[in-house]
Length: 476
Ligand code: 5AD
Ligand code: SF4
Image (cartoon, rainbow, N blue to C red):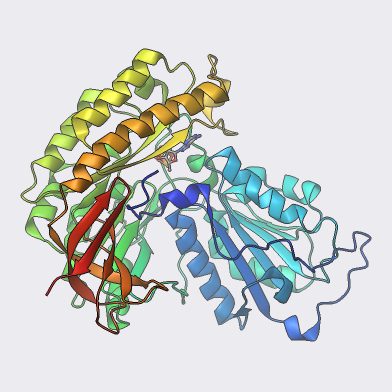
């Protein structure tokens, strides 16, 4: 996995938030005689997030809803009266994590704590969660977050087994208040759900059909963000470039990009994730016309074999994907391209894998996120035969990653001596060491004698490179 590209996707296999560790002191009576929450914990919530940037941002909005209801956020489940897990089910490993978290309450009393499961596992498992973990009282999928205040009110009133599991909404999750984690870079969802039907993917089931936000609401929020001091916005959607403005203005995605970049105070605009079939020339024209649009496109290919792409129902062939790459490469400035790849899809042959490897040679990606195929409930590929063993999937993954490592070794060493503008987002514990993102979304760790750089834009010269890491120093 590529560590120097921070597009949040690596979190699909990790967790964000505070881990419960082994020192949980919460207790679950299991006999219905729960102790009341101690007074000092009243009105507090703990929220742990798993999965992608969409989940991270949903959690920022959920936190906003709770704060506006008078709750206070705390850093551990032990100090909270309301414990929420915002879950991911894209692969089995991610989905299992929440059950291990919930399992920690099995042997202990929850002292009257309210425990809720949100997000994709909530949608996928529904009321079965109450059977597996009877100490849970709220199960709410992402498509029902609009109802969260109402659902919370029911839980607070003492109702057990409160659910929000509809996906037939045409509404998006709008809140009065969002509690953002980062003071300089803001996430902003412009389209929710997904209307594609990739045969391996649980997202259309867990997040429901595609719903685009009104362009005027998006631009209003961008204006507010700029006034609050945010200079970088990242537009989010499972298929962000499938955006269709529901208002009479009827803005195309590329027009929205330009309008967001035009808001005073905004210096960088990112967008993720793009679907190849909806990646059209006007997006490249917008990148050419406006350099505030970051020079990075994340364009998941999933496989280099047309045969496998057909089985995956990806709606494009290898050749059509390569045409999109040529379109991006025709831009006036270099654009970094990253991708997602799945190995070991049912029926994938050695020849199919070779085609994926040769696609890596052809595209020369700046980074890849690669995954072993994981069978998911409610997906068409679950019924496919010709299953590849876990061992073989691991072997294929290693071959793929080694190929990409070779490509990146060359690409990254060629960057030594170049200077990039970084938005500084991190300060190391080591003195005078900082980190930041380039417009093309590479992370560079660099040294500088300046005392306060967080949130600032600086020029950094690259002085060293490994396949996964760039280091540099602030340029004069
Ligand atoms: N198995 C493995 N990887 C998957 N992804 C989506 N569904 C699955 C699955 N069932 C990957 C795809 C997608 C990324 C977010 O997760 O590569 O682009
Ligand atoms: Fe899943 Fe395909 Fe939709 Fe992406 S485009 S969220 S992979 S169904």
